[in-house]
Image (tube, rainbow, N blue to C red; front, side, top):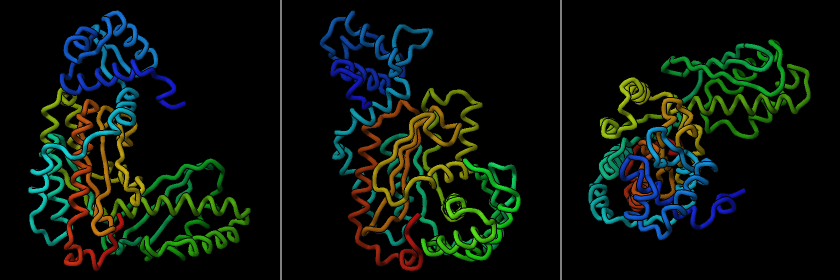
Length: 367
């Protein structure tokens, strides 16, 4: 069932007004404010009834200390999906943004650094950029450690850096210690020293056949094991090769959502350690051009369960050169952030000096 099937036009109008008022004020919103400031043309009693129904449906929350309402995660999600879909990407700051971005640049990382600074300055939130993954990243050695019948651990030693990465894999079917040992053997035969561009359907079919012969099971189980394992390896290679940078972390201090010092310290620690956020964004389809929005508990990083991450891949001459994101409270100015990211993406796509970028010639541009 879609949002349109659940909410009347009057409820949509009131919900939108509450979300926008809460974004602006940071406080619970009452019926009096909606009548006087938001120009909602209904009686106070009608507005209160609609707010109560929106609360029952899960779109609003009611703090114990106030008669007003604040948007829930579901309310923000409805606002983003249904009410901000027609935002105007040609913001009044578009000219300034273009000027800030149009400096002559000769390297991809400078483009991304500049875009991150612009995004943070224009939105007043924390911005991040993710550099492309070099195609040279490879794993020298694999080891599969049996944990129990429904899970195993992949240990990977990266070529050159000798750094060790681990990935726990959970299954919906049972395996044995012998199955795990056979999988380890197949990985080392086929994937040791191979970059992600070398992992193709033909190699995976060969791995399927080898694993089936070693474990003596049906082909379906072998295919499932290979598919799940390769996906985990691919995500790990992204984490190893990706470089993430942040701009405007101090801006978090400006929002009451981060006034809890313990939570703020954990949030800053997560940003400084980087790996959790890299792991989260590496699961996003890097060929997808759509802007991704993760609200509250939709985020994979638990400490961000009351924050929003907005994320978009950036392309130049048809190639993905990296990605940019914005982190802020769920009470985010979504229209402003979406329009800024959209305009950044558009301006970057117009740059024409990609052929002058050495890194674009020597590395794959996919994340």
